[in-house]
Every structure is written in structure tokens, then in C-alpha cells.
Image (cartoon, rainbow, N blue to C red; front, side, top):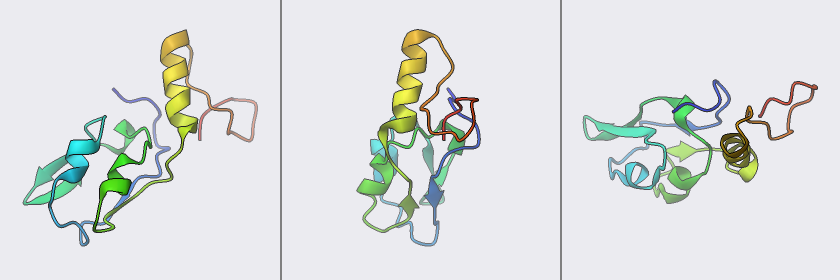
Length: 97
């Protein structure tokens, strides 16, 4: 399930990846898969920026601006049936991130 399109701050460096697979284990959204003994990103739009992957990567292959803003917006949107909005936009559109 994709929540917010083209807003994730997730970054991945394949050169730093050691292929341990820890990111696959901790990612709640299934953003990663293994190919040729290294992690790859299946789709960045699946990322909800929880930060679990980057926090658990001992090799510095992953980075993300983790925080509760977008995750909270997604959860609130699902609970209320409304569009996700974390109030971090500059305009009146209410879009997240």
C-alpha cells in the first residue's frame, strides 16, 4: 500500500551495503528485498519514514529523516478516512512533507 507519493527521504547506497538483510527484517512496509546478495529498494513510496532501516544498518548504507510526522499522518488518515496530513506544508493544501 502506497501512502504518500514522491515525498520519502529514504536514501540507499549500494556500495556500502554488506548484504546482511537486517533492513528486510526491520522494515514494517516491505520496502527492501535482496538481489545479488545486497539489499535493494522495491519502491520508495512504500516507505513511511519510521527510521528502523537506517537505525539498524551498521554499514551506513541507509539514511532517512525519521520522525512521527508522516507516520502519524498516515495512521490518522487511515483511522479517520481522510487524506494524510501532518501539517508540515507551507501552503493551505495540508499535504504532508
